[in-house]
Image (cartoon, rainbow, N blue to C red):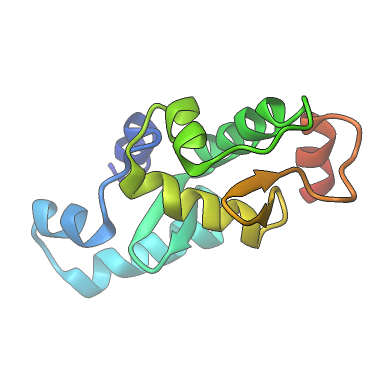
Length: 128
């Protein structure tokens, strides 16, 4: 249920707390399921309450890196539009991409990392 919900939600995932409250049940056991899903590589934790399906996170990286291939930086608003999401999600997504080195922030713009490999796909393969 967790994985299908987060896969279908794409770039508008429910906060973990909301998902747990919706299901009812034991909060601690459900939190442990989230932790296990992260350990198994099925979910990626972006912030304490924000998770993405692993494949969705990989898709986000590819979309952003492809959009950055022209060498121009992207604003949070442009990344928001690219991912068809809201600012509520775009800001933590950008922070996550900065943190893992997919992008680097300069002022209000995101750029590719300085040591970028040839293609976004090679970057993904390099990270695994």
